[in-house]
Image (cartoon, rainbow, N blue to C red; front, side):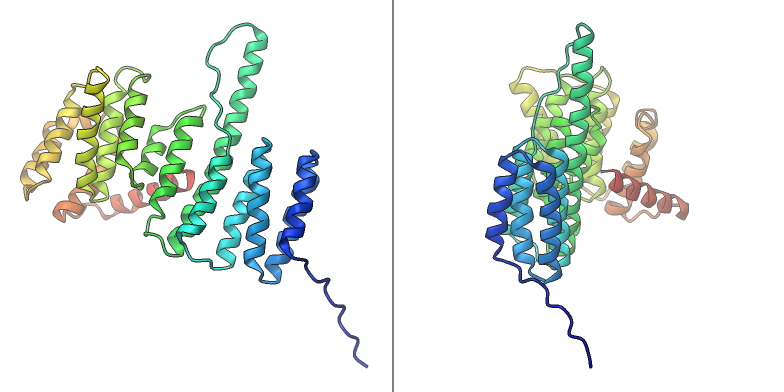
Length: 326
């Protein structure tokens, strides 16, 4: 005689769980609610009720973040994206709006910059630690969302709006600012005007000699993707914003090289492209990544194949490492 398998408890409508956990969060039971969000959403996923699992995780992520529980909120945000993948949910504007809503719930808190007595140093250390947690949490969430979007209907590099969100958050919240990482996402975004504003802001507070490098890197990154239009727009917008704010635009050999390069790429002028690389070698060598970017540009615009095939292989490996860290 075969023994019947015990029946699973029927899952209630998701709104009942949302309301129950909402009360737990508002009562300050953040950890207990977190475990319930994870276990209950897993049951909905197991039953292939993905829409309800997403509703629960979205509500939980927003509530935890709204109460300043960044680690918990970020964990639920990542689970939200993982559920999109498990459910093979296609990319669309409605889902993008839900991702954006979670993103906007991540706290944006200026890190104090003035040091005083020992209490101030302790306060600064705590603020820097909290900022690092925020950036890591938001970055993990948005990187997962970018990957999901690329796999389920957005452009090959992921949705441009998600890249802009991540670039903005890294720039505004990172205690140790990495402009290469910021630029990586802006050039995959769709808002070069905002990118220009970010660069102008950075130029107003960076060390001497950094301003022309961040400009050159931004333009070369656009060009390495074959995007001459946005590279030109960025340069024009930078000059416009600098002029309107009565600031000085960097005048260096590196900026001169970028200006000539943009003009050269407008036409079939491979010999001139090569000549520029030779004549401005000392400026290009200020940033090791520029050589790889220029190799990509030569390949994109003139079909120049690298002399050493290993060079491209190592460059591709470097890009993978950068993407993972971003």
